Length: 220
Ligand code: G6P
Ligand code: MG
Image 1 (cartoon, rainbow, N blue to C red):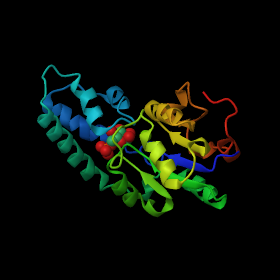
Image 2: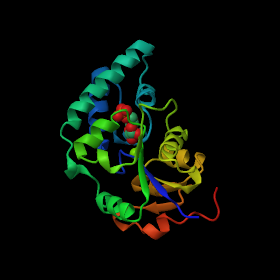
Image 3: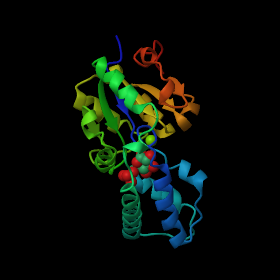
């Protein structure tokens, strides 16, 4: 058996939106006088918007009501979306286009599996919406990574059994979600340090496609 579909995380795999997330959360934390730095921002990788807010608010002494939290998350998203207007195909990460073309040439199905509710907007901005056979994102799931829901949904939309899917991820939460879904997990960037990743790479430019499509003999 071979891997017959690849599920891509979006932020940090297809496109780098980290800086925009950082800038938007930084503005909110400064306004609220909450300590926030790039190290804390790293912990928000792959984590849903509301869970990200909870991580940020854990550095505050003040307690926030559910309604205040909803408003803060909305304010952050308004700033973030304004910044996303600057996104263009130039922001697609190295190796992505070549990989998508190689997978298409081999008839391998490709999907997005992202926690982001801004997935449709981001894909439109970078001009890749029509390159994916299925898009599972934060708008269609209840449980965010490390829960496997988004990847299982992507596999279902593709009509491919999870065991034949490989996930490419830049976050520990995403690698955990892929493993929980029974899928092969490829860690790139910061996720190249994840102990439970089946393949580890600095970025997508040096990816060995034959190795990517091989099913692991010993699954954890
Ligand atoms: C991705 C990012 C996270 C972000 C999440 C939700 O997984 O890595 O940092 O919190 O999406 O993003 P959203 O666009 O819905 O606020
Ligand atoms: Mg990511």
